[in-house]
Length: 325
View 1 (spheres, helix red, strand yellow):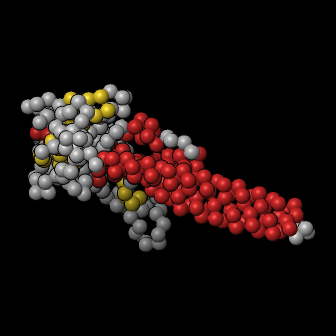
View 2 (spheres, rainbow, N blue to C red; view 1 turned 90 degrees about the horizontal axis):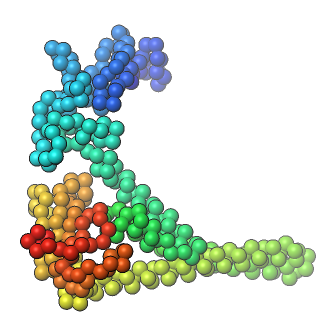
View 3 (cartoon, helix red, strand yellow; view 1 turned 90 degrees about the vertical axis):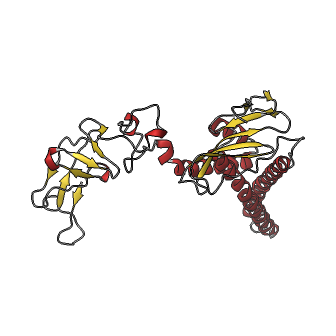
């Protein structure tokens, strides 16, 4: 819908100020534009792209090329077609306009790519929720839930783990405050009860305060233990070195690289894929360790070194010389 507040009163009059109403099929073909003659046709339509009806072409201008919604295809090859070797260069959003978009006609964005930032936020919030449940109930759901939802590595698992850590820190502080407040409340209740006049009320207050103190103390203690476990795990990872551990992956993407590339050192190599939305401009997609002891996967299988881990896949697999390193 396109509208114009002609009289500036902040209210849109459907009879005179709605310029145009469009309805589209999923691939963008307009199946009934309702144009208000007073306002004229509004050119920016499907996906906000300019509709070009010169010479009866009826194409949408995406910038890099023109799109024909009548056939669901572009009129020229995708400039990024070398990245999509398994599909035709004329396809529109992998033939799935519900899940995917194409901002400028160069390369489609799938739901995973366009919503990646939101998924990372959700993963962090989910981790925080699981962390609070663990600290309040004394459970240990974090590892099983994290593994089930996000696997053992990747950016989403990292955000989940960060959320858990934040919940532990907040639970430690919040539980301590609850315990102190509860003890103070219990003290007030005992004082009231000792006066004799308000003994029943004082007893209720004291019991409530002790309950609050107990819950807060339990939550703080669970959070403290979880933080200690996480710290011990991190120290263990940091102490894994060449010849005794798996070998820390201190490799970082080359900031001067123009595209996908690999970084190598004595412990192995890491492959990075260009992603301009990532602050570092690159995503880690594969890591190969060539030094250190065997790795134990989440399913308890042991994989000898050298081994390789791939983004989005749980655990590691044996590395192949000449292919992975």
